Image (cartoon, rainbow, N blue to C red; front, top):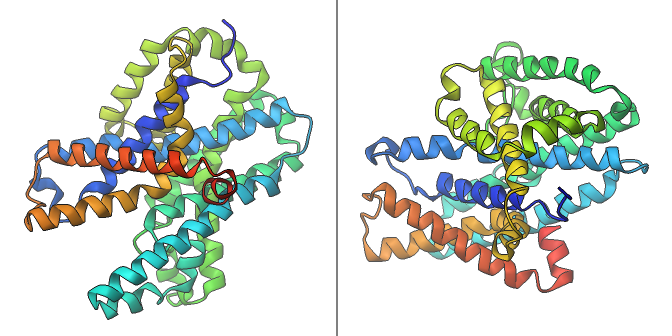
Amino acid sequence: MARQQRLIGIDLFRGLAILAVAILHVFGGGAIDSIAGWQQITDFALFAVPFYLALSFYLAIEKLYLSPQPYPLQARLVRLLVPYLFWSAAYLLYKMVKYGAAGEVSRLVNLFADPLALICFGGAAFHLYFLPLIAVGTLQIALLDLARFTSRSWSGLALLVPIGLLGYEILLRTGNEYQLDVSCAFKPLLAAVLPTGNTNPILRLVLAIVAWGLRCLPYIFVGAILAHPNTSKFRLNLVERQPVVWVLLFVILNLYGDRFLPQAVYEVSRGYVALLAAIACSYRLKDNHPIESFGICSFGIYLIHLFAIEILQSLAKRIDPNYLRVNSIVLLLAAFASVAISWLVTTLLMKNKRWSRIMFG
């Protein structure tokens, strides 16, 4: 079957993943276990970030195999970091106005208490950390390209996968991964050998980059195998012709995988099984403009959706101060609504090509 210009299944899973992100962020606070079923729903929704990591690195490496040109590092970094800076400034300005209008001086002071987090770790809005994370993986791909990474056989690349997974598993098991709530990495290690280490901004930045790099490497190695020209028969016979199998595997893995898989293997496999299910579905789904639009807008929806959630939460507080005492259905509807609002806003903003490049890369 001829390959479509756009893989519509990937657009579909992009949309599912951005909905999952909204589900993870829509709950405004309180005890999550007080809402029946919500913990299970959010556990399933955690596939979103692994899927986006897998998709980003797989597509980047696939282009490396198909193009004789060197990896376009500068162009890729610009497409990541310009939107990152724009939305960091937008969220920072929003919070300054919000806290200032509410007279919350302490929160305003805390906002600027960690300049390094604001500049490098997405401190203006917690979900923005994903862009520096992808940027670190992008740098790794560029370095591997210089080392003629893509000239290796797929079996040679396969030997690197366990190494990457082992490094990430050790990071997770020791609690030295990058921690979003404190905007630092290797916290236990520093506590043992250099308790004041995180007060040094250069060391803190370097350690965060190392932790992000260890997280990205297994995704990059698996992506290099799947995108390798010599694995095309695998993609044809075991992926493209078996969409039902891969969708079922995606569901089962997300429901039960954490019971028998190591943490690193579970995370990376969630991302790539979702990607393979998306690729498999692409060859059974017909062209669909709404799904394609959803996929194209997914990055913008990701960047904007916290604004939509804040608006909905503000309205909910006005209607019912005890709005947190809700059920899973209400929260799911709120997640759908925030994504719909963000999709509409992104679609309108993307009509201006100049600003679209600045906001969405």
